[in-house]
Image (tube, rainbow over all chains, first blue to last red; front, side, top):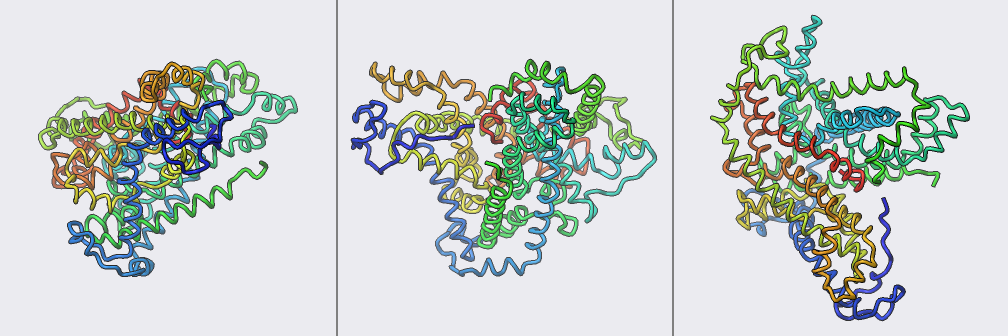
Length: 324
Length: 292
């Protein structure tokens, strides 16, 4: 995708109407440039207003709140919240529940992301391996979970994993096995949520990889084949290096999504058993909207945000294509 | 990126040399197994919604109901005002979609085709906004909406999503491919930017608008966290909020899997049908924007 912007027009903050005399490379008159200045900002206004009120302001406000004891009474009277410095932050790192949530979220990401990327890549490679029939059918099949409501899907999976009436228990009983109570077990609850997340999200990754695979020039593959490369060698030496940018992108967006995991534990386990599926977002939601420790919850939101930023930057560095 | 949509014709002759007939059978078997696993929870949901309680609890399980029943649906409808939640979801999703189509296209047009001071900084702002997780804004947004008395209102549900950065990005990418000469010619003829935008640019980007409409509608339809926070009055619940509240409250759902599957089916089915009919636009949009 080309995201190049012409470097023009950004040179100086000029008031609408007062056109800069430069920048006539494309033969445009200063007059029309001035008109465009005004038009440009008028066209931007609705987005900017909404962005400022409902995004920029809340981002700053969360930061401000995280340094206060913002509580339920401050919902009606925000300015009376008291400044308490870094107290919320220092409290966080002694809060076992928060640390547990941080660990659980890391667990979800570290296991879930590679599985999702791997499954999505596998589906894309299979779909791109020269089959001509029913491609759309298969693609729709793999992608369908992505478009459905996480809440509905979580309700369905709770039932799929149900130890007495569930799908998995049913399949197991057909071959004479019994299944554990997946969501009721401290050890198995999180792996179950991860499995569901992989199932739900691999379609997104697959679509990204299909686009990436189709961008690989045919003659590169043909040359490899002429040189006698096996299917595995072709995959390892040609496909993987050439879909690296796609892999990077898919990894970054999957990681960001998984770091924010909320609905699955909210619906399926309510963070249990014994907080084994309590994630940072769920913990933040509870602190903020059940207990109305909103200052404290804001600190959590910022810690999570910083973690997300840090990991994204790290991934961009580590996975960047060094050959370019 | 339009290559993503013409793979069938391309791929077949090019790849035949590689995958032999046996290999191909293997690929089909693997793909079929994959799709079976992917669709199993949906099939299970759909079948279970029509089973009697006795067959739901049967062991070994009854896969295909021998006795189809609508009892779960009628019991569910007695307890949950699903038509109302459906209506709420539709209203919110339609408003969010329409405002995104208009506002994102406007800024997309400005970023793609108008030269104005600060344009590149504005585009950087849009890209930055793409990176910010929604959870970061929830707490002050709730306070703000409480102050504005917009909790339990459609406006409160719509406004925070009325102009998404993703839509701006998508529309800008599409609009860049419109030839400048066309717009210049219109300007020569004395057309204003507003006229050009509505009469020339918007009709040219109809496919992009369709993609954006579908992605936005769906995002809103499935949105959960904000509607959960921004509604206390069950009369303003959207479908996911109603379903989650119902499912996590054992007093209401009585742990009745039949009712829960009936509810999930009603939430999932419209979206699945829309997706299957319009699937081309989904994958196109994702491949083009490179973004979910």
